[in-house]
Image (cartoon, rainbow, N blue to C red):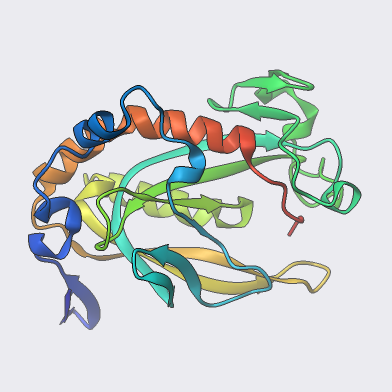
Length: 245
């Protein structure tokens, strides 16, 4: 992918041949069904991109050639959804690794313990967390983004600290009449620290450039969305607990 400057901003110039999903010229969902039959994609089958711990400034993710470190992720968002997850015990108490006690896929109905209606649940109120700085029942956003090296999307699991940045970015696109699959999205890391001085990283979103063939990505997004929704539901249900920021 080449770079150019426009109004002093560096943009990515993308050709259709830059993306494996395009050059393969196949229906990815049909290939998956042919190869796997009635076996669903597991959450662990898709490569994940996680926010690094300790205020790290480099992303790390797996490719067919091995692990790659990068200052920025650039790709095409094809699906995104937000969930709620709640653990009764804190990370310090449980040591992590356990699935959530309660999960909500639609942000309205909780499934598990305590379950019920999320908007009326005291655990969704700010200040209800163990450190009294956030919600005990966390919102998490999953962003499915296709990178040049693979035809299937990677999963970005965004913690509460990165929700505002992703939401503002998606709303900015919407306010300009742009769908997320019509732009190359750049995701960088921004270091920060909480009230206790503990460092962490936040995802920072921006437009890297236009997509030269938006109709292809519109169709791609439409076809794969039902499959990714099921994957997101499983991801939320099986998510491992992390320490509070």
